[in-house]
Each structure stands twice: as structure tokens, then as C-alpha cells.
Amino acid sequence: MNRALNFNAGPAALPEAVLERAQKEWINFNGTGMAVMELSHRSKEYQAIQERAQNLFRKLLDVPDTYEVLFLQGGASLQFTMVPMNLLDRETTGYYVLTGVWSEKALSEAEKIGNASVCASGKDSNYKIIPDVKSIHTGDDAAYLHITSNNTIFGTQWHETPEVSGAPLVADMSSDILSRPVDISKYGLIYAGAQKNLGPSGVTVVVIDKELLKRSKESLPIMLNYATHAKNSSLYNTPPTLAVYLLMLVLEWAEEMGGAVALEKMNKEKAALLYNEIDESGGFYKGHADKSSRSLMNVTFTLEKTEAEAAFLSKAKEHGFIGLNGHRSVGGCRASIYNAVPIQHVEKLAQFMREFRLRY
Image (tube, rainbow, N blue to C red):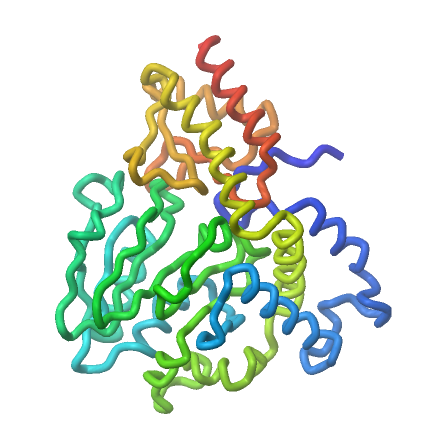
């Protein structure tokens, strides 16, 4: 069987070596006579999986001991609610930088919880560009500053980390976590759905400064309180055991690949292949994102003619490329090239783009 040329935005490609390892252990994990999803989450076998996953995550992203690493459920969408529930109070405001659909949704949920305000936005440019960090200002009442580090729909990414005195930085890193090194100390809280770079859907990683845990009030619903999960090592209730196991395998693979530094180098090489085709096409392909804000994870573009775009997507499908349609809200084309997408698949896509342009 040939592996699909998978450019889906999420759930996305997983490393082939990870899938083969999981297949090998599918029926009998570590001599238990059980599959991972049959293990009790209180068993020493499963707890070893969870601890290894947390330790590997800490190692790969150099997470200081002053931070908790939590494995939760509900995706980034639940974090849109949990962040303001835990960090806001009546006298403070959550400040949001709008860079696309997901940051808009995060703001919308925060407004239901308490005071939330937009402090910078790229909406007027149709989210082609990330706002200049120097333009971001918050009030004295700031509880936090929220950004979305990579924007899957519009294909933009932060390349400079904003800093606001007195306000912890909160980041939704669902689509670029572990794609490059991150200075965790610049953030108060990071959250990321796993289904793009870390593993399958079903588990969400939250990295939170222990000082911020003090804001989580006991009056909160117990499952929506970060302190609950920190106190119970993410085992207050039954975790998504299979998803955590696969997360562990992906982290082991990332370590074998050379960690975040090596992955960033590879991701830059993959992105350059596609952006070069766009830039050298004479306008046949039009990149959505401004060059200063281009994402290494999601390459978004349109074709100069509507009929050409339809033909491109149709021919691409015939050639085995999966997931190249742009998000339903904006259309166009999108190639998601997360960590697990092999460079050979990106080379094939770049070649297809070149040949389609020359033949069309």
C-alpha cells in the first residue's frame, strides 16, 4: 500500500513509524495481553505511558519546572472557555489579538465569561498579515494577552513573540506546537490540540505557569478548573488513553528526528518548496499571506482564474493529493505541511504545481 499524499489541515498526517509501532503493539501492549485502550487508567502500565509523554514533552520544549503540563480533552475550543474562566475576574480584562477565525472564536467565548477587548487586529487586511508587535497595547486591567500563534485558515504565523509588561501571554499553539523551538518562559499559558503536530485528535496539551493556577477559583465547575487537573496529574477522570499513548509515540519520533531545532529546519525546507512555486509562477498562483507573515505549517493560495483553480483541485485529487481544498469559509487552496508530512510528499506537490502551471 502506498501512503496517501496527505495535506489535511487536521486531523492530519501522523509519522508512518508511529503508526507501524502502534500496529505492532495494538493487541498486546508491553506484554499485558491487552491493547492500550483496554488498560485501566489507574494501572502502572498506563501511568508509565502518561508520565513518559509528559517528560518527553517537557524535554522537547524545554518546559521549566515552574510550569504544569496537563493533558485535557475538548480541543482548543474548550480552552477558549477555560482560559477566561480561570484567569479573569470582575476587575480585569482579557486582551485579544485577532489574526483569523480561531482568535475570533476565542474572543467570542471570553466575552461570554467577562471583560474581553481587541487590542490589535489583522481583519482589515483579510488576515493577510500579523499585526506589528509594537502596535499591541493593553490596559492596566489586563488579565492576559491572547494570541493564536499560527492561523490554519489564512496561512499566517507569528515570527516575533509579543511581550506586554504585567500581562501573561496566552497562546493557542494548536497548529504549530513543536514545529520550532519556543521560549516557554515568555508565556503564562499555552494550549494545543494534538491533531496537527502532536498526535491524533482527542487530547489537548496545556502548559501553565504554576503562579497562574492560583487564579483558578474553587467556585469553578470542577472539570473546568485547571487546578483540578494539576492536582491530579491529569487523571481526575478517565483520560483519552489511546490518544495519549499515540502522543507519546509521536514525541519519541520527534526526539529521534532531532527535536524542535531539527523539525524547524525541515519545516522551513518544506515551506520553501511551495512558496518558491508560488513566487516564481508570475501570478498564476497567488499566496494569501503577506511574505512577512507566511506560515511554515499552512501554505494558502489561489489561482488567477476560478476555472483554473477548480481544474487544479480536480487534477490534484486524480494524482492522489488529499486535503488541498481551502477552508470552506475562504475557499482557494491550502497545503498543510505539519511535522509528519514527509518532504518527499511536498516535493511531489511542488512538482505537480509546476507541471500544472506549464500545461494549463
